[in-house]
Length: 332
Ligand SMILES: NC(=O)c1ccc[n+]([C@@H]2O[C@H](COP(=O)([O-])OP(=O)(O)OC[C@H]3O[C@@H](n4cnc5c(N)ncnc54)[C@H](OP(=O)(O)O)[C@@H]3O)[C@@H](O)[C@H]2O)c1
Image (cartoon, rainbow, N blue to C red):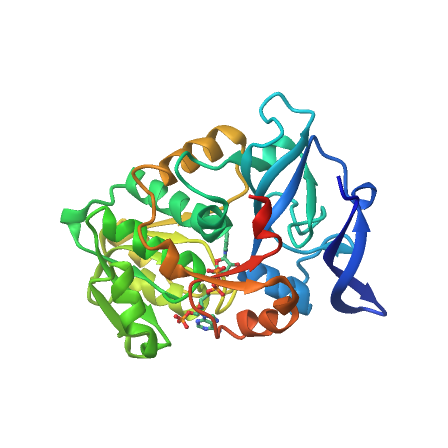
């Protein structure tokens, strides 16, 4: 086994965060039961905030970035995995407080690893990644709270983003009427191609300022927070369900209790840091009834050495779909 590999490391000096490539060895990695040869990683919004220092994401410097990766097990001290298994790694401390996926090798606790579902390859698995996992969790939680195709429209905002693209794909294939709200109307055809029934310009969404406005949505997948989330609370139907999973616009939002006490609106938090039973359940669903149909359209596959430029694009919200990084595609 070749011991050295390239890694994209995030460092801090004099209070300034920066990121660059370095050559590392397996011995430099953090402890863990499973050593994975990485084929693909991706750039999530959180990765871009971390690498550009725009938000205090990294908890331990230096840290290899990358909060998800797919590849092949090289060594395992866990009975759950054996060499050659095709796996996906994400969530918990990966790429935040423990070296992440922007490297030829990743060594992690077995709880952070899932087997890639049968019939899915490493590229499809990373296209789903932590973004698709979060979308699947949102759909599952919303369905547990009464979401049903017959009850009305579901809004997905930040629609051209990673989580939203996969949420649109999953919801539309389950028969929901999905309304995609985006700032990028030039991506209308892309969003219709994922299964959205309507595409609306986010700036034209009428949300008003009264505690309760016209009831438009039975469900909403919110990647944005801020005024977008506040507007959703005012425009949900009776017993409508909002999955709050992101903060691309703002971490704060302001609303009243009226939607909750007069319309029974349910605001559900979505956190992708889950233990193995739920992770296995959702990855199984993503290989079967929640399997996205348009992964090839969603994946924007880029070379490893373009990471620094791409970080700026993602943090500026100028991307669409999932930005996949080909670290060493031949290993899977
Ligand atoms: N809860 C969890 O466990 C979890 C897991 C994964 C991700 N997340 C969060 O979910 C959110 C989405 O993640 P992602 O990886 O899908 O991000 P992403 O690919 O960068 O997509 C975010 C989308 O939001 C819109 N957007 C970006 N900046 C905006 C702004 N300032 N104002 C309004 N809209 C803006 C853009 O869509 P349009 O241009 O189409 O409007 C952009 O494509 C992030 O906040 C991320 O941290 C949470």
